Image 1 (cartoon, rainbow, N blue to C red):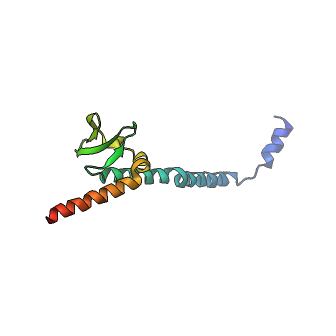
Image 2 (cartoon, one colour):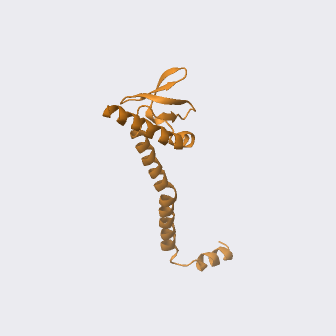
Image 3 (tube, helix red, strand yellow):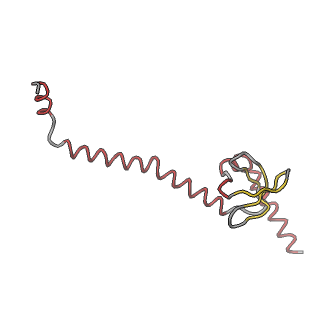
Length: 123
């Protein structure tokens, strides 16, 4: 061994192992709050969005297809487009694309259809 290697090994502090464990713990906690937790929150929002879908809602699929929900089944949904009706999985509906495209309009349209349904029920 060279003299330089011996001096470098002697210069290392003895408490380095515990400091390394603390740094690893800080990294794990950082990853949880910066990556894992936001992803879990996003998944919950997607699940809630898919569960709250109603017949007549206008949606955009991840493939870019625009349409209106005609029927909702346990295993998927039927989307009505200008070219006909197509069956897709609920997971194919994009919350971000739908909100970006129909955000304000969808809320106004749903409120208007709800008012019409209430008026027809009163008659």
